[in-house]
Length: 324
Image (cartoon, rainbow, N blue to C red; front, top):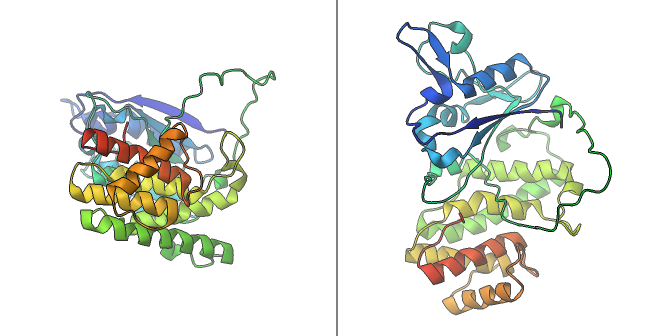
């Protein structure tokens, strides 16, 4: 795609943002952190897209080493040449103006890789609400042969391809009929989900509504890319609901149990399940199919399959979560 990726390994001893943004030493000289350097480099090269990859980002608590970025993401404004950027990341006054005014520019994306085990930390709702969680759990060991041709260099995308349509629905004043139809489909689904999540105090709000809506709108532009390994189409809304809703659900309470049953039934037939036996029957069908990543004959096949896994864990272990 012609973009530039920068890898920043996260360390377990990161307890504040000095390792990310930087700090002033004993001589009052500012020592910039790696993420601030990447942000400044991106701002200096507006025609090149940059990606900052926080490797193993949950080795430390994201809320402790990344608070300024989590806050500034909520304070973006449009640029004249397209895209959105934030105000300066640093809250405190710096003597060095070269770094004091660095923002998150429109041509910078922040991505984090995650492994979940006994050495890592959970994510708070604040972090999850600001992210799309993409799970890479399918394994195909035989898929290693190339097509025999030389590796093809990626085409360089123009910057306009990276820019979001908008970031809030209220800004979308000239939506087409097709866009309005997709927005209505997404909001209707989220309304139904909120009825199920309500008793557990897990309802999604306006940020999630807007992000899911714009996800499906952007998917319209590249609909040919939403296919599985067999070439069958994948519903972008199915993926968006899995990424934005399910990571919120974790625990062992009766409220979580009702959420899982309700969502599982809704994802399959549009109606919540009322009993454990009904949930167990669906999971048994999923297991007989080989525990696929998509449950056939469901309204939302991928959402349903992940919920089968989460219900299976709840029944077997008395606890469930989205994370493996």
